[in-house]
Image (cartoon, rainbow, N blue to C red; front, side, top):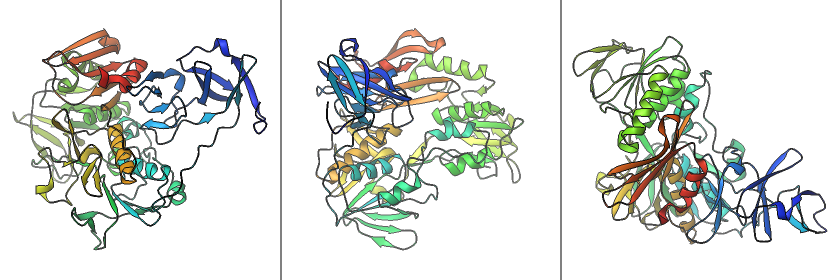
Length: 506
């Protein structure tokens, strides 16, 4: 036994540990997991560093590169089964590894986590400016510091709130009865001080992509060595009469949620315009708070384009069983009231009473600081495989227009934004950026969760295994050539976890 590691716990016989399977053990009250490959055993923290998901409910699988990854069951963060290093977000930290020794056929695990080797400091005299303060921005800043970047990092964004988990806004924060509830922070305030991340609370009004010159609304200009565009998107607004009335809201920021939450009670009548993921998650959250909710949509079923008719039908049935009313295949003509919203008029001139209106009809890239000729047809800005826009300028997240199999895509999903940012950050430092994985996202409505993996392209048919009405299924989306181009699951985290690593091989 190593002399420098004196505090060990005998957890189980080596022969009892199945190879290739994540196995839970405990040391006192500490939950750990073991992974065995041959006679090699690794021990890791039993909870994902992202949201604390139990890693034993995840899956271990081999990637196309031959390495084994441990995949979180909840949000598909993946970690090296060799070292615990972070491979794919949404986690920002590695999976803590604990020392292991095998003696006389018994597995002994140290009680103190191993400290990873710190990289040598580099680029001390450089400046990286990140435009934006969301998921991609924080993922880039974390990656830069983790890889040894020792120069300045400027995080530029107009919101006063510390960067937070935007996915929680419609899923959890809006459902909280506390009107002062806030979404979880991506990093505590102390982290910005410890890591020397300089927050610049201002709006970028211009970026010259040839000189890297950034102009802020306050009139200050700067020219950093590297720029990452991670400004995300802004909610689309309806250009109809009454859209500026008090009580009409979009749902894109913590400020939006606070405004809505302060006005919602059990007798509040809410009209949600749009049946996309934000609109339907908001409908579920508001019903949990007792509000009356009517969803107006120009489509017959929510999510039919993304998930297919059978799953979309079941999602509507779920919402209707919770008391949500639907008016489908309609358009909104006007929002009515003198100063405060009172009702909504449809195209057939029928009216629906409303105390609040939430507009959830999509988002557009927040790239007002660039000239229109610099944007691609989908409204984003084109990047190469390293997320590079121009020399020393990169983009990630909702604004990045990436090429996959000859098509341009903008992926408006949290995990992809972070993956893109990590690629950009490593490329800035002259390190291998890695390849972008297949986009994955999830939606939580009431107690039902659906996960989806795939690029947002059309499909010819859907093949479903399992019971859609019980939310225990796997749906495979197949194009006209017979290729599986997407995968949706409910109640099957291990299957989706493996697909998140191996899907590109399908």
